[in-house]
Length: 210
Image (cartoon, rainbow, N blue to C red; front, side):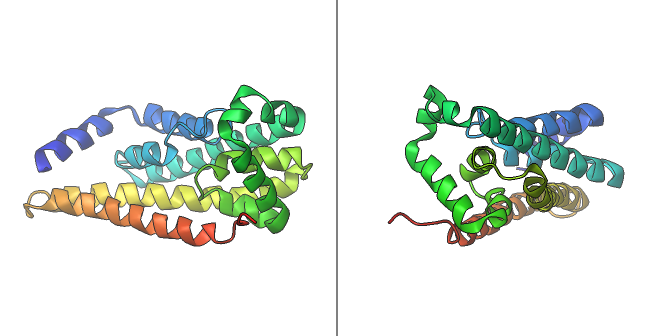
């Protein structure tokens, strides 16, 4: 376990910081865009990138980049919804997303308003569809941004902090604790479990099928 983590963390760490942070920002931009947001695992990319942060400056830069990437991605979804919403819904991509998911996003936005924008950042599927739906519904962009920025900031800070904490903890314990690798994995798995509970809890605020 430790040998693998040594190789893994060394590989991530050798990537130029600017390139690593830039790629993470690009990945999250694409992840929050409706066209491919259901395919790219943005949370995994951010966690991996976070394990390579070597300083507080890189840590802060990664968080800012993730927030900016998320905002740009969600703004693209909003603009697409505002301009081409109905056409996208009836396109092959729209049919692939599924009528049920479109209805869920529309009802969620109708019931929760701005809170739907905030909560959707933490929910699978909806985090890609709700920005588009907000554009279709004619929500003012300033209101959309006011709700999505704090959500993106909270999401980015949580994932980057956990990734960096796991890596730093492993590096500090590696020379003295034989099972340091399991501690690293335990931190990541605990975070994933907590996020699953958060998503389940927030999912209760989404409208249920009649």
